[in-house]
Amino acid sequence: MTAWPYAVGDETPFTCPTCAALAGSQPLRATAEAAACLSCGRRYPVLGGVPCLVPDPERFRFQQLRDLQDYELFTTTRQREIGVERGLPQLLPLTRERLLQLLGAMERERQLVGDVLAPVVRGLDAEAARIAPGAAAPVRDMRVLEMYETVFRDWAWGQAESERALALVQRLASGHSLGKLAVFGAGACRLAADVQRTLGPAATYALDCNPLPLFIAERVLSGAVVEACEYPTGPRGLSNTAVLQRLQSQHAHPPGLVLALADARRPPFADDSLDSVLTPWFIDVVSADLPETIATIGQVLRTGGLWLNQGPLRFSGSASRRYSIEEVHELVRLGGFEIVAELSDDQPYFDSPHAGARRIETVYGFAARKVRAVPGRAVPTQDAPPWAVDVTQPIPALPELAALQERLVFSAGAISLIDGERSVSDLAIALGNELGVEPLRLIEPLRSLLLTLLVAG
Image 1 (tube, rainbow, N blue to C red):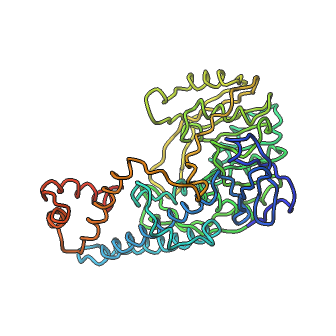
Image 2: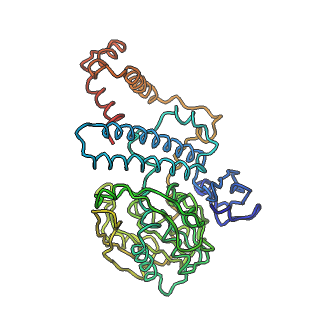
Image 3: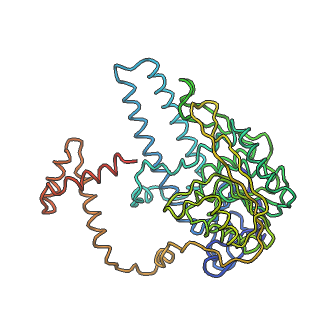
């Protein structure tokens, strides 16, 4: 992994994402293993050479540890299930072989994920994370592996797709100097690296808040060969069930490319400080409405700066937010930009040579120049209340706490009664007697709870 690229005492190109919502842009100064805000004093750690520039890095790291523990629990359970299946008497020898491949690949994947994320979770209290109440989402959401498949396209078999993505950026940026460029949603960073190496911006800042692809990219760009197992969709044959891939780069880490863990909804840059922003496959998947994304980009770009966008239009949410390309263009103009180039192209997407399934995406691209100042950045409201920011402040006794306590007592009571022998009806009787509730009334709540915890994905 590369080292923190700034000497102790240097003022970095980044600003404090916490102060951005409160006191405006405040510079960060490099220390030995962190970047420190000169205003609020918050420290942003450098994890394995990658600065962690999310608004609350301690909370972010703790959540990553929770997600890693959930992943390890899920894979342990899944490996046990596959092991049981492999022992069934009626299976073909070929089926047993396939299941054995899966077991080996899952174990290799577990080791890789734990090793890659070690810098993120190192030094945290694993036991405290294990017993802390989790989010509402069930374990089977597997957040650790979000967009993990992009590492295979970027660093194994996806040379053709990467070349097409770079060519599209070249067409949109033709005749323009990129200067200081930020890539929002850089993922596994192949495009960011190719742009820095080929188009020669003064600097490229590759931002993503998903650590696994980003940290694998950091290793690959530093010259390492990372072995990882790909699970192709609709594998072409038995040998393609789980394919051991060697992730590597044909080129050295290009000078001027900096990877950072950062939330592009609150990018760690001063207002008007960037010459260009690239959003590859980003504006329709980020959890912000498009006008907010446009406002954020406009805030960090200087007047005359260039915004390059490419990707499909797969907006989700309410019907009014599922924008067509015409609506996208109009919102861009209303956000203070003029569109200077546009194109569309049908491109293969995740065309793995080992998969029997692939798709074609219509990719829309545009280049837009910032021509006027826009309203202040639509920064998402800071979701941490005062008592979570300052742990010495009192927690308010909200009316919702009583209802929450009832739900927690019910959930904990139901889980404590599971012994491998009791049925849902048995749990309803035991819990009903304890709570003074007719057991029949508890059947559906218990079924719903247990399906969410143990089955629903």
